[in-house]
Amino acid sequence: MNKLYFSLLFYLLSSTFIIAQPKEGMILWEQQRPITWSDFKAKPVRSSPYHAQTQGSLNYTFDNKGPGQYIFKLNVKFVKQKSWSKPKEQTDNLLKHEQGHFDIYELYGRIIMKRLKDAKVFNEKNFSDKVAKIFRKGFEDLQKFQEKYDRETNHSKDKKKQEEWNEKIADLLEELAAYKVKEVAFKV
Image (cartoon, rainbow, N blue to C red; front, side, top):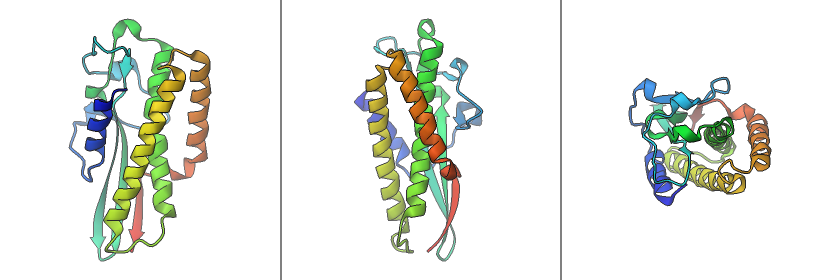
């Protein structure tokens, strides 16, 4: 994945507000709803050395529900209009690889939720700054993990490594199953 993609993605995802998207333009992550090739709606980048690109989104909002009461909401989405594939290259193995990218977004959503729940000393003055810091760190870690995933699987071409990564991601999601809740209340 290229640096421009990550820079743009970081900018879009690190904001504390959600840009409204038509519901049909995104898929919220659900274990029982894997992505399909028909979900990739963007025009393929013919000059790209890659055969597909999954555009995930990880963002949050928090609402102040009164003095010292906040609701933190996290969204993990697949963005159809920015995800593309080259039709002649669509294979089951490549689709599993792209699903892995989407699953990694969910994984880091859970890691962020865990870090928020484990965080100490939230107060009215530092709440939004601490949340933003935890989110930024989680997103930076997600980017590194995505890069490692692509590098070690050679973008799905190393089938043995791809299978190992499929298992690794599934195991990590299971380990963090307690943090799949996407909304949490805080009293500070």
